[in-house]
Image 1 (cartoon, rainbow, N blue to C red):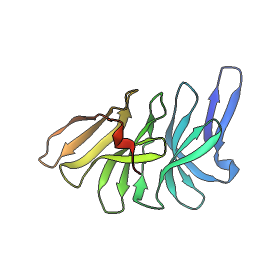
Image 2 (image 1 turned 30 degrees about the horizontal axis):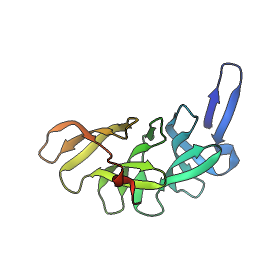
Image 3 (image 1 turned 135 degrees about the horizontal axis):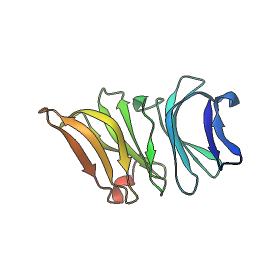
Length: 156
């Protein structure tokens, strides 16, 4: 099991479970035009996480060692600039939609206040706008949009 790319003539290995680092790679991975990758996986230790590979370097975006209780099971999505959006459950009991850019994870929305649940995958465009489907606590379900202003990515 792994993440591979191909050009019609050859297959390149990006990451695979036989390297004894990852136990499982889940759902789908995402790739940008510059061949950066993001994916949801479980380590041999049982830690779940969202991982990013850029220029051969593996970066942990978020994992279940700290604030997250679970991540996924749907994979993350990425824009061409390498920003990533994903769903996760917090240790505090809330579920949420999160975004990552250059070593910073921010919470976009959670079930603490107005939202009751999230559905499907969030998507993120080249401007950093995240669209997600959610149900409000009043029962209304719709698509919601969050626009990154730049200063939102200042903390982890």
